[in-house]
Image (cartoon, helix red, strand yellow):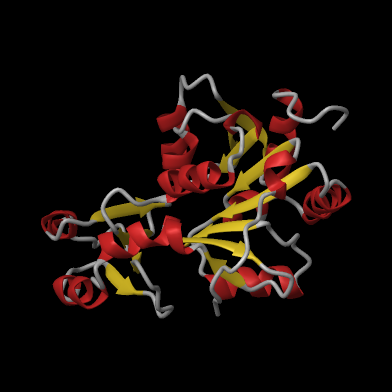
Length: 258
């Protein structure tokens, strides 16, 4: 699934635009025609555009998506809701960046078993079948969810994140998409002003609030739109999914002659 990084990747810092985007509903959102048009645009401009996926998805999902489903291969991935930070090699394998993951691993302290045991009798949560390294994730039924789970997680010194009113993630304290993306950008020496952040649900809020140029794409979760209301650096797009990203690139003039 993963390998160890043995070489530095610095070329992305020279690119005109770095797109840091959520997947579901964002980079994978919009009509088939819009997706194919935007993906072709990305591929035709790889010398100008860097691509970072910032997603709740795991490494295997990302690899299969880019190897077999026609989605552009990213340069880097902030995956597992910010608990994985990796480069992507020529074979589409995610290569964890050890200096950036050490802090995450320490904050998590192998909590998988403790979390599952503590939440095993909580109503409204169903453990997801995928095993994650530094997080525990559940499908959530909002009608039966017992909010005592939030206090249980907090008492363990961890963070709980509810998104799209149907996902419940337990994460290391102060680790999520936003902080992990910011650490990756600093590691790569990328100018934040050239980075466009894109998302559509509450688990994207931490990166949309970083102060970087950002877009909440059309079709975003209402709670996300409410949360970014009034933030001048966030463009609330009409276009759904990739059409919203393209709209933001044009609106913010982030690529010459885009």
